[in-house]
Length: 216
Image 1 (cartoon, one colour):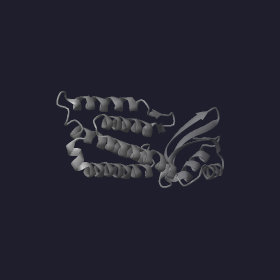
Image 2 (tube, helix red, strand yellow):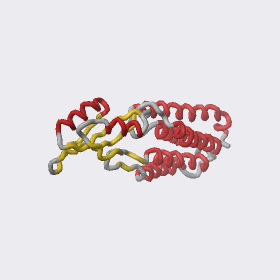
Image 3 (cartoon, helix red, strand yellow):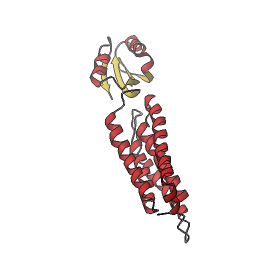
Image 4 (tube, helix red, strand yellow):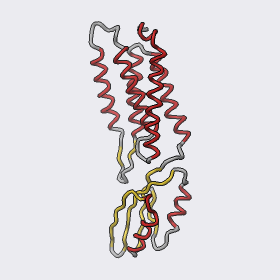
């Protein structure tokens, strides 16, 4: 192993742990606000960036025949471009694939770590990734909000306006249209994560004068 790594392995582990925790903290704030990229995505990106940095500083000191860091830079941008293709924005403005793309990116960092001789750091980062992907996912945060798209229809425009008013601050934006003699409104809501889908449906169907068409 690189002599620098043997002397500073504890410091490197501390840096990786710090990156994971700081990324998770930022992601928690984003998830609490109901944004697309949450705890897992930010945690993965922070760990990947940290490991890429450690690799660039310590992983190529024994490579005197070529500039291995230039190869690493190409891998970083290439993996990022590949991960970008996994991010999808649906017609309801719901973004999916962020965590998968971040996982692919950090996996590239793990592969580079193993290839540069930083095997222990790659193993530790892999363990953190599995914790991030599995344990945090099983935890299923109940704080904060989640985006929900609701479609109501009614022949009475005032009933739709009253419904939007009753939903209050949960409405982030809406789109009103009219087909024949019937009005239709698509509403993007910020719903508390602790509210179950059944409770949400019961609450939305309780509005008078409007009909719930769809819920996504």
